Structure formats: structure tokens, C-alpha cells
Image (cartoon, rainbow, N blue to C red; front, side, top):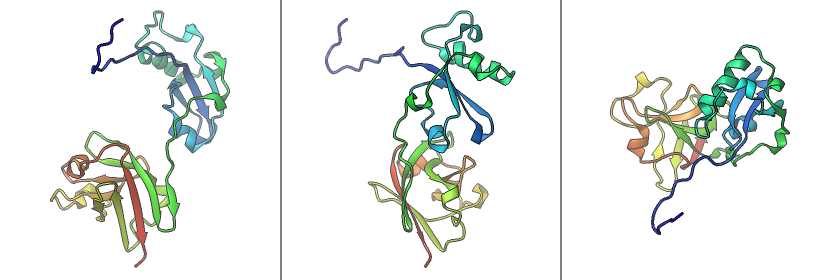
Length: 210
């Protein structure tokens, strides 16, 4: 096969295990998907109670393609789990310690500073950071807070409990996202577009009492 220079050559269909995991501490939740690091944030929250490789074809569609496991394996397995099928009926046990993980960079707090990053941008253009609201209970009670973006140095220091409190002037503000993380939004606009940042952008959250 020929690969001309200075060209992009996408590759798909690479091998990775299809897995299902459960975590009792999260309330008997099940997660079904590829073993490619997708569940790294889940692993960071709580230890995996049990995991299986989805090797039992009885719980897949009759015809499994090589490119659409979401339809052919993951969706049927999820439906069977919802009906009460035991996790261990779905395939062979896997050691949770061997599952693929990526470095999700948990927030680092040093005094009044928290070093973190932007996890993702939602469909509205809101920036969702990796800072759990649980570690900033004083988000709306501290006299001053600010989120500094790197390397641009852009600073957001306004706070809003609700989007309706926004001033409508395209000024970004800090809010508590429903996902449980600190977010940055713009009323009737896109914070990502206004600030010109994307997923993975490093940020520093600063809380001051004076």
C-alpha cells in the first residue's frame, strides 16, 4: 500500500477489547464500551468492582461488523444488563488493574490555587473544567474567585448561579455545571468562541478571602 508524503492517512478498525464494568460505590452502575481509556475518569472516581470482556456472542447482534461495535455489541449488551442479565454472563472476567487508562490529570490544589484543565466543550459552547464542585464549596461565598487560562492569560472573575443572571454582554462567567464541575459560560453565546480556547486548555482557579 502506498502512503504519499505530506498526506494524512486515517486508520480505523484497530483492535481493542469490548468491556463492561460495574462500580457498586456509584450505585450499581454499569459502563459498556471499548477498552481504550474511555472510562479513565470513571476509574479515577471509584475503584472498579468487576469487569468482563464481552466475548459471549449470545448477547450481541447476529451479525457483528468490524466498524460499528456501538450498534452491534455495546447497545445490545447494555439492553441485556438493563433487563437483569448478570455481568458475568456477558463474557470472560478481566482484571480491573489491566484496563487501559489515560492520565486524566486530576486537579492539583496548592493553598488558594487549583491547577486544572478544560475537560470538554458542550454543545452550547460552555467550557467544562476538571474542577469538581465538591472541592470548591465556597465557589459562591468567597469574596473573590477567578479562573485564569494559559497561555493566553485571559481571566474570568464573574460568577453566576443561573444563566438568566448573565448580563447579556458576551462577558464570560463562572458557574456550577450540572455535571458537577466548575464551568465557564456566556449568556446566549459561546464561551469557547469568546475566549478562543478548547478542550485540554490549562487553567488555574484562584480563591481569595480578601
